[in-house]
Length: 315
Length: 274
Image 1 (cartoon, chains in turn purple, yellow):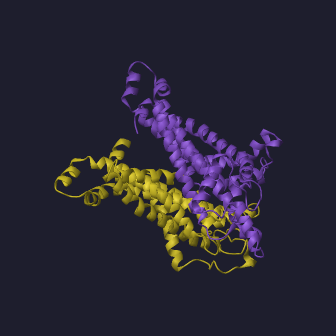
Image 2 (cartoon, chains in turn blue, purple):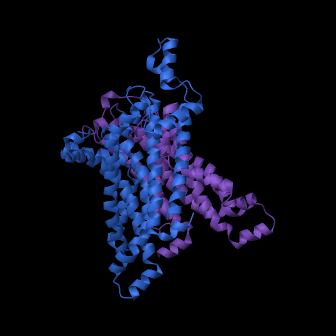
Image 3 (cartoon, chains in turn purple, cyan):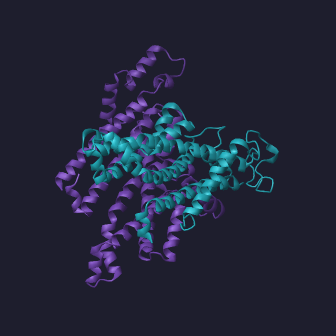
């Protein structure tokens, strides 16, 4: 297990370095001088030079990469060109909206998908199964930002149960915060829950057809007992894979959904940064999201090994 | 055959309707969408304007027809990029399984997978500005590892078959075997995955255009129509209803078509289901 863990850890490190190089090169070769952008067209050459020096823009590409990547390691993302405060501080504030939103959506999606998938699989071919599959077919096809707009129309504008957008902040209490995140989380969760339900159902059906389930039934277990004790655990592997992949879609999807609800999260931050050409903020947010995706996939790999000991020996 | 398959028929019908609307819009639309008619703005659906008009008095049906063109073109080219780059990479990786090129291809794929297409679009837009072309590139790049992995996985099982062994004994090289024997046998799989990626591409394009990273005005796009309607949703819900339904039904149609094609092209699966 330790060897497997170390191997995965090494691959995690390499992926992070490679991703950071890609992001750095993509955004650092951009035409245009951030110093000139910050100081305006009337800036003197020596002032520009001083600012470039201060922002660390004068070195070679390698020096600049090493200083940026070194900063990332100790949590120093640099200073935003437009906000004039450390990027880490900016991201820290916004993360308190985006991360709870993604986790809330993941929780909702799992809470819907597990029972729905198990229910459909246990009544294969029945009206329940057809109904659940029909709903998931719609859930996969619906654009989540459009669904979000419809929910705003129904639950915020007409019924007035929720606010149409904005975030009161966690200072107003956890309940108020969660209430503001409920519609966005439902919108984010719907397509993911639909996909997860389908994966759960088909994986469970595959497992229920295996010999060891027949053996379990033969030794006297009921269908339900065989499902809960034997099938479910084995069916979880593909489900975990999809959940890992979904986290990246949830984070990326949050960027769009935050715009529907005017939530002050990473998504809003990144769009404001793009329009003001605050590239260091774009660079840092993208790096952070990619880091999250890679880290989640790493955790899924470890979770595999815990669920299925046979996988530890492979790769 | 079509009628025996539950998902194939609605899938084919929906796909034909939207592809047809896009094609027809090249030569004819009910109203010119470049002409503003403020007197007729935000009209609810009627016989003259079946889907109503928008805040500038433009006919929404005509805009959806032209928007279908943008969505389909972006998604089609993005799938094309994914296939043209991904399939050869997958074939090459499978032909040299376990070698350095295989490792490099697969690890690069893993890396690209860590960048959801929205993040690629964010980076491209930050550098070059927003446009439909950048949306195509962003979605296309994300499609490459999808097709590379699929092709490699399917090709690996084929490489252990006897007829491939026979081709090797006959003196054919890895490249020739890949093209002449492996590729024809993974085509079905690629068609099915292509349909799925196509529908995902339409969703992605709509999302990117909605947040302003995709098609820019005056290009009509379903995502942009939704973005424009957002602030007026309580006054005129039909502005948001029809473009959203267009996306939903197109994606639904393509997904059903993909399911149907899979059942049709994969006899093993069909037997297992019946």
